[in-house]
Each structure stands twice: as structure tokens, then as C-alpha cells.
Image (cartoon, rainbow, N blue to C red; front, side):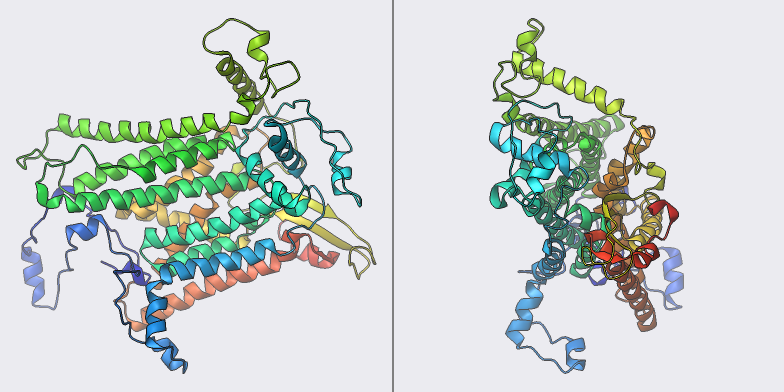
Length: 595
């Protein structure tokens, strides 16, 4: 085992699950080659106990960290000495303290000057007003042409109307945006508040997910830190549009399924003494899997682009269940004999069917609930949500009126999305997303000397939705590394994070002719960050590596993280709409397609 808790990368499952003969496999006798090489100093690697293969131990925490932790050699060399009780407490709770500290850093970045620019930027012109209407009527409404100027003017007012508007995205994201407006008013800080909250929470979630995935608090905090300084995630955490909310529920579902995976395997580990065939069919109550289904339903209830994630995660968790049974020796009969192929296939089918039912049906039910505001609105013409009266105007057909109206609304939404070809200045092809070929300008002004803080002849103010270039370009190499780990080393962690990239990225290649944008990629950014973190773990090397190897790996990893953070700070002015000289703005346009 490569001690992942200290930065190494390892395959936590047996490369050949069938090699585990029963619930508690006896150590295999040394091979002839191993005995022959033992005279030359060869020592066979320690065989990881089966229960640790099922559920590797966490790196720290209550029950794991000893009551008294030896002082840190690094702090000692720096001349620092904390009281033993305080140091032990910090070590014991580092799995929470580290991620919370990283999330606090991300929160400061996102909340500072959240109300600027004082305008409805890019698609905020739709979602901020739709959110306001939802909290008052339960459905979206039309607005006057001068609504933006009235809302953001020197003497702001809200020209609210109640006539329904045709909207092509489900309501969850707008309910969330509207919560901030309820708390802080119909102003830029109000409609961006919940975005900053979700952006900060997603950093905390990713740090905890990284810790669980890699069994390393250090690597978990690195993942959270990298996400906090990604430009695209940062900009969308400060802009009231839907895509960051899609990412939040996507990441939440992944984290919940990781917890479910550990709980299920822990249950199997406890059953190892009950016999090889006991309890294979029922893997216990799965509340975290159901919660993941709720998260996926909320993701779909924000934007339909979350649909592929449901299919990907159903397959992922079903594969995890089947793998756990094979590893635990449960693919056997009650008397310990290997199952026949037919029975083995039946058990595989059960895993996939139960995964699909528990996640898919929960997601579907959650999605329907998200339309409650529209469903409860009036069916009188012009008095309720758009198309709420369609079944009344078109009697007959199968099913209750509310379902027929909802189905018709969804049909028209699907038709709109599949035929959206209107050209846009900042549209891009998914082939260019990983290299940041065409970012999206959410806001741009060209103040002159004396305007908006400009101190030169010409200045620029821009909010550019672009990822941190060094992070994304390192992410390309990291994704290739993870593909190698998954294909050649059968590393389940690489496969898990690649499934997130596949679900969030590849479906867009089917719609290359549509009007799509780079910022749609934010939904898979956390998984790309996990890939970079996994690559950094490999750079750090295993705990038993030589001192020179560890020093070289630590130096390289530190330089990479430092360079990414510098890159974020360099682009910070054009991520936040700061006024800078035009020459400085031009210096940040590294590619001509960024202009």
C-alpha cells in the first residue's frame, strides 16, 4: 500500500477480485521466483487485509488519531511549540479544520465587493427577475423593457407584473437565487448572495470529498484550494446564473455516493464472519444513495443538462456494489462455492436495477416536486403559470389536467432547446473548452481618464468567465494521467472522477451545432480539480520513497500549486470588473480568441 494519507497514490482494491477465495483470504504462499529473489534482498509487499481493502482507514479523526500526538518536526525546526493537548486536538480534527479554513478563504474571495458591478450582467437579466417573480407568484412573469434601468438606477424600483412568461429552464435555481433577494433585497448583492454561498460550500464539499477519495486530509485541502482559485468557478460564484447551481448539486450527489460506498463496504466487512453467502442480496438501508437521488433531482430541476449525471451515477454506484461483493467473496453460494455464470449475471443485474430504481425514481419524484409553485398556480387564462391552463383549453387526452399541461410545457421546452441555433458572439465548441478557447465576457466597459477610477487615457472593466489557465491546462495532463490509472492500474478513484467529467462534458459534443458556451463546463470543474489533485499526490510520491524523491516531488507539487494561485491573482482584475489600464487588460488577453 502506498500510504495515500501521506500523499501517495494507490489502487485500493485487489487487481484480481477473484483471487480472494473467501471472506477472509489466507496469505498466499511465496512464489518460486519470490523465494529465489529473497536471497538478493527481495521482500514481498505486505498484503492489505481484506477489510482495509473494502474500507481503507481514514487519515485522522476521533478514534483514528491517538490521544497524544508527537510534536511536529517541522514546527520544532521553526522554533514553534504548541501545548501537547492543543496540538493533539488540532491533529484529531484536522479533517474538518483544514477544509473549513480553505472554505473560509474561498468565501472571503467570493463575498468581497459582491455587489459590483452594480448592474444586471449577462443572463442575470433573466434569472434575477425570474427569481423575484417566483417568490411572489410561484411562476415566472414578464417584465417591462425598462425594468433593468429601474432596478439598478439611482432611485431603484421594481416594476413587477403578474402576467406569465414562457421560460425554458426548471425553477430550482431561480428559487435559490430568489432566497438571497428575500434576505437582502432586489439588488446585485441580493441576487448574487446565494451564488457566493453555494460557491463557498462547494469548496468545503470538494475538500471533504478529496479527503475521503484519497484518504488524505492534505490532498483534500489541496483540491479545495485549487477550486477556490479557479477563475470560472469564482466568476460564476459571483453571478446569478444557473450553471454554478447545477455544479453544486452534481458535486453533492457525488459526495453522497462516496459516503454510501464506504458505508456499504463497511457493512460487508462486518458480515465477513457470517459466511461467504450471507446477506449478499440486501446491502442495508441506503439513505445517502437516496439523498444523492434528491440532489440529482434538484440538479435536473435547475437545468436539464444534469440529466446525463443520473445515468452516469446509476452505473457508477452499481459497479461499486458489484465490485464490493466480488472483493468480499460474496459472489459465492451459501456453502462457499463459486456462483455459476447465470447466477453471477443475475446479481449484477440486481445491482444495476436497484441502483436505477433507488436513484432514478428518487430523482424523478424530486424533480416533479420542484414544479410545485407552477402546479399550485391558477388554471384561469392569464392568471397562473405559462401553459398552466393548456389542458383546460385542450380537453381530452390521457391523465389528469395538471400532468397533461406539465407534459405539454416540457415538450415545448425540449423543442426549444433542440432547435436553439441563434448565433452569439461568445458561443464556443466543446472541443475548445479545456484549452479555454473562447471565454465569455459577462460585463465590459471602457472608461476614460477620470471615469470609474481610470487614471490613464484608456481603461477597461471586464468580468470574463474564464478558468484559471494554468489549472485548466494542467487539468488536461491530469485527465490523461487518470485515464492511465483507470485503464492500466484499475484505480477506482480515477474511474470515479472520470465519470464526473464524462457526464458533465461529453454530452455537449452531441450538440455542437447549438448555441453553447464555455461556462457550461463549470459542472465538471470539481472533477478536473480532483484529477489535478490526484496527479499532485503522485508527484508527492509514496511515504516510503527516498528523501530525495520526496523532496523533488514536494518541490514540484508546491511549484505547481503556487503557479496556479499566482495565475489566479494575475487574472483577478478581469474576473471582478476592476478598472485597469488598457495596456494591462491587453496583457491578460493571452489568446486572440479571448477578446
